[in-house]
Length: 444
Ligand SMILES: *[C@@H]1O[C@H](CO)[C@@H](O)[C@H](O)[C@H]1NC(C)=O
Ligand SMILES: *[C@@H]1O[C@H](CO)[C@@H](O)[C@H](O)[C@H]1NC(C)=O
Ligand SMILES: *[C@@H]1O[C@H](CO)[C@@H](O)[C@H](O)[C@H]1NC(C)=O
Ligand SMILES: *[C@@H]1O[C@H](CO)[C@@H](O)[C@H](O)[C@H]1NC(C)=O
Image (tube, rainbow, N blue to C red; front, side, top):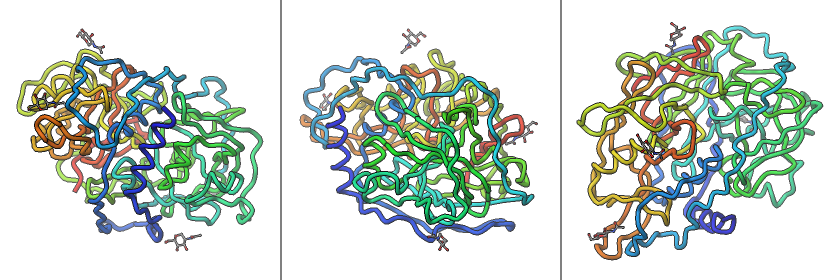
């Protein structure tokens, strides 16, 4: 599985001419309305099955074997896939004990605010943003599905950091090591582990002076190979933080009290460049009314109820298998309850479940129906079918048709549905400590 994964990634990388986004940092914006450059990557072949595997790994999901036949006439572009022999994984580590989080001194400024670009890379499988740590610009992946911040650094071997930006503690006068260590594992095979340090972290003008983050001395191959990102900024609730001896606060928890409003926002966009904001709801960035969805933070996630769905113009139905859901910027796909996925692809002519790529495929020439997902007690989010296509994945040898991998797949085996980037890209989302709650509105 490791070997196959590498092969797939090598193929992917050869399509990608990645330029580290520099000069993407945005100044503090007190005024409304601004435009960001448009970036379109059209020559990239996305690999849906890798995206699904990544999500499964992150949450330690074991894919259940689904019915779907062997489909001898389907030939994936990427050659032989390993399927999903998921050996279970331990799930993410979460430090359940110890409420004694040593709080770091956050900044003393009040009414802080910051905005950074969120740029789609790896063919839309993740969004990355510039973060200044101790004066050094490093491109990181913001992840609302975990609580650890960690960054590739000069303590890693040069073969590990090849093609990556690295943080150099020696070049920062404000950096200090912190007693403790971290070891986060996402499912069975990807992980990062090492020391802890603290430094001034500046995200688009929002500044935390002593943010504690991980300095891995070891990271797994998945992170080494993904040269578009050099670490993560965890933005789930701090209770999921894996740092020892006690959980540390996320960047957001450290700065929330200094913000004009205790919120951060995401506006991920299908055209590739959106942004994350800290400190205020920008009402100029969305249309219509914003829904207010109650969040259950007891498991550490931005978790809400999603109990109903509709496909196309069909009737609203109850979800039967998995009715909890989380908003996760760190997952690519929209992973939903098995009964909903089944009902969805029943409405897609020529679709079928392919065990060779571990997900639903359909002829690319077919238009996907819209998908309505309930969020909270009264909001119905309608995701247009046009944004739910994820990638061309292979050819039907009998019909000659090009087959696509759907952006909607099953969350089978997980305790919750995962509303990843394929969903979030359609919305301006407010992650609000008040409640806590999630504000959701169609973005401009
Ligand atoms: C970080 O980005 C900003 C904005 O583009 C730039 O002014 C600054 O020079 C960069 N700093 C480093 C250390 O690269
Ligand atoms: C989903 O729920 C139905 C009953 O509503 C059940 O028959 C089926 O086995 C469940 N599927 C999964 C994957 O849990
Ligand atoms: C390939 O096309 C044939 C003919 O249209 C169809 O019967 C078969 O189910 C298709 N196979 C897949 C995997 O889509
Ligand atoms: C949702 O409602 C709660 C309680 O009324 C409020 O505190 C919070 O700011 C609202 N959140 C959003 C995102 O609108």
